[in-house]
Structure formats: C-alpha cells, structure tokens
Amino acid sequence: MNAPINANMDRTKYLGGKQSKRVPLLNEGLVRHLYGSGMTIAELAVEIGCTDRALRLFMIRCGIERRVAAKRDQRGPNNCLWKADRVTYKAAHNRVYATRGRPQKCEHCGSQSTDRKYEWANVSGKYHDPSDYIRLCRSCHCKYDGLLKNLGDYANVPPKNRP
Ligand SMILES: [Zn+2]
Image (cartoon, rainbow, N blue to C red):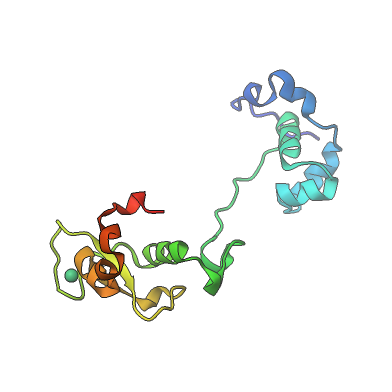
C-alpha cells in the first residue's frame, strides 16, 4: 500500500534531533488520499488542523512524494499586498523600474552617455501609473523637479543621508 521509500532522499536532516518529536501522528491514508486529489500542503494542513511544517514533516516521514511547488505569478494585482493607486511614493518608483526597466537615456537633453545616471521622472502626479513617467538624466531630473531651487543647502546632503 505504501509507496516505496526513496533511498536517495536524505531525511536525517529533517527528522534528526528534537524535530522528530514534533512530527504529528496523522492518518497516513487520509493524507495520501487528499494530497493525491490535488490539494496543496497549505490547504491540507487547514483541513487536518495542523501547521504546514508539521504536515510536511509527516509526509517526509511516510515517504509521500511531494509535488514541486508551482511558480505563481505574484506581480501586480495578483499579489495580496497590491495597493493599486494607494501605493507609496517609493514603491511607485520601484514599480516603474520593475515594469519598464532601468532608463538608459534622457528624453530631455538626449544624452545616452554611460557616465550619467538615468531615472524615471513622474510627469503629472499619477505616481501609481508606470506609464506616467519619462526618462531623464539626474541633472535634467533635478531641474525638472525644481529640486535644487527648493532644497537650498539640503541639496548638498547625499540622498542616502536624507531622512
Ligand atoms: Zn538630461
């Protein structure tokens, strides 16, 4: 009835020492049946009433082959932490880099020199919208945002030291 134990699998590092005492006593047949029916370990743990980790240890001990966890698309709205247009300023900029990559040129002065740093600059205040950004070099970006004028002496503080 039981599947043959895979001799290549090193269980000692999972079940050695005190950890082995925490492996719960579950109904092996039930676990095999439900897991085989397509439930995930997380779903099965909820169904049985134990933690994911305990269930995983039990399955290892019984030699139940576990499926490789499927890669899921967790970008954008598929992520449980997705904030849509309530995104913070910093996260909004990160989102632009994630969707449009790192800018390689300046759309204002036309520079493509590799000596310069290029950044995404927001155009009309729609920070949550990655298409509302243009490529600018650091110099044009500062002028564009009026940073130097507004910051005064503060502009001389390196960005990493700013609060
Ligand atoms: Zn420029």
